Amino acid sequence: MKICIVSDSHDRADALAQAVGEAKARGAEAVIHCGDLIGAQTVKPALAHGLPVHLIHGNNVGDTQATHRQSRASGGLLQYHGQDARLELGGRRIFVVHYDDYGLAFACTGDWALVCCGHSHRAEAREVANVKGGRTWLVNPGTVAGLAAPATWALGDLAAMRFEICALNASISA
Image (tube, rainbow, N blue to C red; front, top):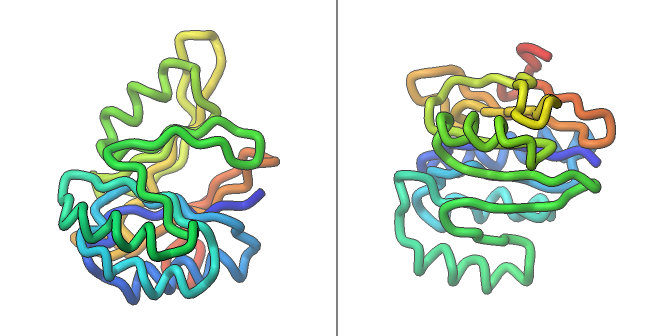
């Protein structure tokens, strides 16, 4: 299963929808948004691509009631998890949190195959050693809005456990 991982869209609906569209074209079946969506209306164009979106709120919360209403009105396409999410996709346990330092801490527990985070606007995908003697993937897709950094998102292949940081319309690293 391939997934689109985005973060820090900061009300840039066009950039978010573009990333989701590019990910869908590359085989993504679901979207994880690591926070700072802000306005509930920001996700509407991305939902038009028909992929389920798992969303947390981040530190720029926006109107949580509007986000809950948008989730209820989406027919199950938008799942709003609040401050963090515990997911199982493609047979993998995934933890989603906004803050990158919290993401690293959760990756180090060894309880998750993948930890997704945002906040720093610095894109990276790397394996980190965990306390159980294994390794956990930590993916920060950067900022899809391109705020003080390039506009980036991540494409994940959960079967192969491979992650690629992508710029809107171009891959920039693997």
